[in-house]
Image (cartoon, rainbow, N blue to C red):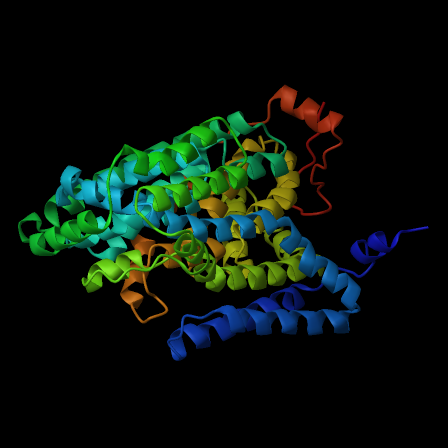
Length: 505
């Protein structure tokens, strides 16, 4: 007899037609378009929530019942609970790192070390090094990225250029770090090893970063006027920071704790919480904050009235409450993606795409664009890696190619492109953490998407390699044997005509 869980998850309802599978997605995208472009209101929560309800109603008429829909809706959310906790901790980190003087000190000395000409290239390199060490682009953007945004502002550099350099560097680390959750997820769902996966990403990632570095240098020396830096503003900001905070090496210990523990491969949540606790102590002992003040910083963010409006705008942020906007968006988009997966809508779309694929180039484009499409539709970078990874691995085996090609493809369409989609969890976090103010009407800062050069260039290089037959390895005899030993599915000709059965013998 089947258990209740099996009855909920293993239903006998047929896959929907392509039109029915696309209908809830098109409906939701239409609502998003009206909200964003007609009403000029960047609050995607309600359109996606209405799309979720529409998807559930449509599924009900197809034969699904609430228990089944609830299973899909909450399953993905449960998987993402650690991410939700990390986001709340990052809110606390922002508040306490400012209160302890960590972020102000990075800003203060950043003005002394950096120049406008090299700032963008240096910001990208700094964020990439920290992100590789931490294994998380989000923490890098919310901490070091936050400090760099104000340094760039002081140099008179447009916010979107600074944000683009930060995103390019931070998400490079998220893609290449063995500590990153997405970097571990991609080889896990495609059946490859972690370090083989990282090595196979080098041909696209390294050239993309080199080209981005050169572009940022060019912009710094040719498009940014270093002679018209707002020295008065920089001096005022530096003076205000120095008068309100005590700077010494101890103040930087929260950053060092995170770096050291990350290198020792400690779990992210206890590592970040330890950094929060140390920041609290420094805020009280070094900066003179009271225990009650520090507790309020954890909840509502740091607060100061320095007499300088620009300084207050920089420092008055953080806290758990500051993350409610992105947390609610993530929960809604995860629920939407979970229902689409549970009702097999995404499965239908992917299989219909596979029927059109006839070469490794087409397969690479399809898998990367499917990861991108899942990012756009479901708003979840994890689902954009996990779902195409499960579905396309059969097709790569059927064509005789290593699934390393797939793991790189879905990392590029999932991890790297997620911050470039404003309503995606990654994009929403970047916009919020870097203070781009899109919701407040500063839509020109959406140009950070174009300025995040390495993020969109890496997938394009992947397409070029596939078209030229370069860096797309065939499956080795050991890999084929592993398919056979693990009873992996190889896509058969009757499933999609362009493919031919490839045996493991």
